[in-house]
Length: 147
Image 1: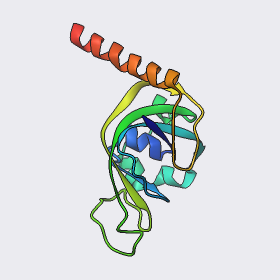
Image 2: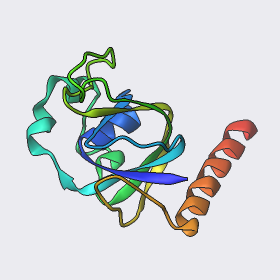
Image 3: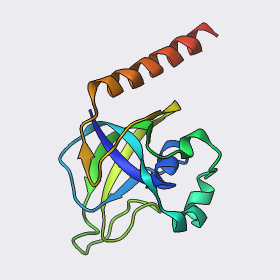
Image 4: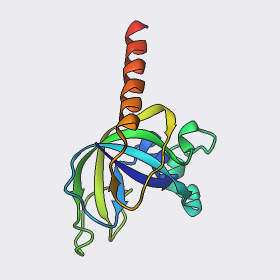
């Protein structure tokens, strides 16, 4: 498993608002599960973006926190066409000139888990963090089945 630190409110938009593309400066060969970590930095100008507002941005939401893992996603693929001057059909979240990391099967965590991240690029989370997230999802699934 790998992790990616993303500035708020973009991390929130991935966890809650259907943002299925992460705009990155480099491609990656990695495919698979990815922790979405809300970095300690906030893109204040983005908070007023129509896309962010449509994603339901609410600074009072627990997943709007910083310095914590807030979701798990699958990194399904990377489109680099926009970097090479070509066009792509990666949707409204895709910035021109960026590598578009396509995220699928996004699951917001029931509560954020405080963690130190790294950027730019992918980083390997500690096994204790991965275990805590797995346990959290297992407990949530058990509660869902008992109701």
